[in-house]
Image 1 (cartoon, rainbow, N blue to C red):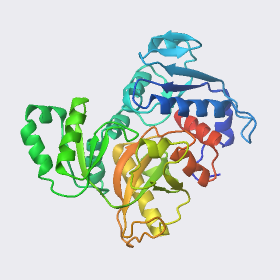
Image 2: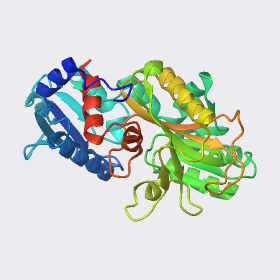
Image 3: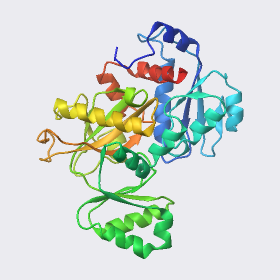
Image 4: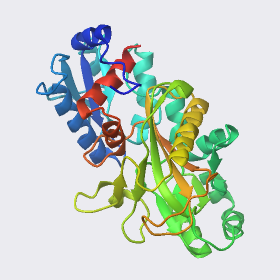
Length: 361
C-alpha cells in the first residue's frame, strides 16, 4: 500500500462499494480519441472483479460526450442536464476527458453547479493549469523554475502583426518552442530553429484561434512527476524519465505510438536520488500554488550535460524547469501516471478507485 492511498481503508471501501461511478469520456477537443481510450480502460478496470479489490464493486455507468456536445447514455443522446438527471444524484463522475472543455474547467463548473461530485481538480485549478502562460507565472512566483519566454495573445498578434513578429525575431538565435498556450497532448507545439520558423508557427497558432507562448529550449532530460492529493499535502509518485526516439521531442506521436515512440523509465535509471526528490518537491510546490486538488501530472525538463541516454550528467544543485501541469492525465496503455503508480505498488484498478475515493470527500 502506497502512503497516499485512501480507498483501501475499511470505512472507505464500504462507501466506495455502494457509490455509483459514471465514467465520462469523449468530448469535442483534439484529444477526443485519447479520451475514449482512457475512458474505455478506466471503465473496463472498474468493472473487472477478478483482482484483489474484487469486493469493491460499485455500480458503473458510461457517458460519452459526442462531437456535438451531447451526453450519450444507454444509446440516447441527451442534453447534459438531462443526462445527469437520469443518473443517481450521489454518483461520482470519473473524468476521463482530455483537453478542451473537459480539462479547462467548464465541465467541472457544470457538475459543481449541479451539485455533482467529480474526480480531479476543481474549476479554478483546471482553468489555470490549462493555460500554460498563466500557470507558468504562478509556478515561477512559487519558486519553481520555468524557461525564458514570450507570450502574445491572439489579439496582440493580429492587431499589430509587424510589431509582434519583431518581438519574436528579437528573441535571437537558438531553438525555441512555439506553443498554443491552451492545447494539450503536444497539439499546436512547434520546435523552431530559426526566427522565420517561429514567425510561421505563431501565424499558424493565431489563425487557429490560439494565444502564443514561446519558450527557449532547455537541453536535458524530460521527466514527469505525478501527485495524488491536495496541494502540498499531496503524495508524490516515482519520477518517470522520458527519452524521445531520434531527434524528435515528446510530441503526440512519441506519446501514443503503439509501435514505437518515446522510451519511458520508472523507476528512474539516470537521475540521482537527490534530484528525483527535488523534482517531487517542485511538483508539490507548483500543485499547492495552483490550488490543485485530486491528482495531476506535472512535466519538467532537467538540464544536463551529455545528450545521450545513459550518458547524461546532472549537477548536484540542478533545478528542474517546469513545462506544464496536466490535471486530467491519460489512462491509456502508454500513459505515465498509471506507470508511476504501478512503480509505487498501486495497480490500475486500485488507482481508478483511489481517484474515486478522493472525490467522495
